[in-house]
Amino acid sequence: PELRRALEQVGRSSAIVNHPLSVFVAPPMGTTAVDELVEASTQIADRRYGALIVVEGVTGLQEYVRSGKLLDGEISADLLVNIFFPNTPMHDGAVIIREDRILAAGCLLPLSDNLSTKDLGTRHKAAVGITEQTDAFCIAISEETGTISIARSGHLIHDVSPERLRRLLTVFYGRQIAESQVQVAQ
Image 1: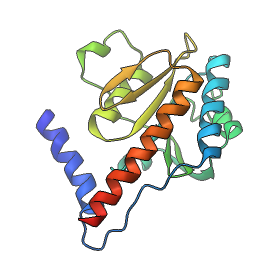
Image 2: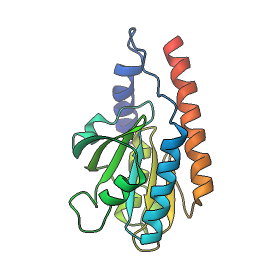
Image 3: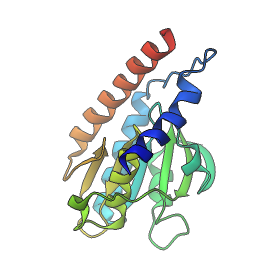
């Protein structure tokens, strides 16, 4: 499984990042977009709706985007809260964000095979799963407890405050820009 994941990740990223004509650079997420993501996460957690929000890194997520409904909407707390309102068609899927846009909703993600996630729900297993296979940043909000967790590189951090979420999103986008610029320069 580890070899398969590595080959999948190389296949996804090499066609975009290493192409000689590639100018792909993950643009900085605007302060407004980060604010909207943090506000949406806070409201969803307070209301215990549950949510799964994936922020794309350099590795493309197109195959997961195709599993959901295309939206291509501006990031807003109101839109995200409405998407994750309980018992609506896209409530149980993931939202995928590319740059400063909500690209798709209701997306299906791979579940983690990691044994340390055995006590977690499907949302958290999917959050870890997508970050095991890609360089995405994932926000998982528990419907049962109303806590915000984040997943990155196959690791899950529980009970993240809105302030910490803001810092982590800012750091994530800063690293993506730096990595992209180095790869484009090569």
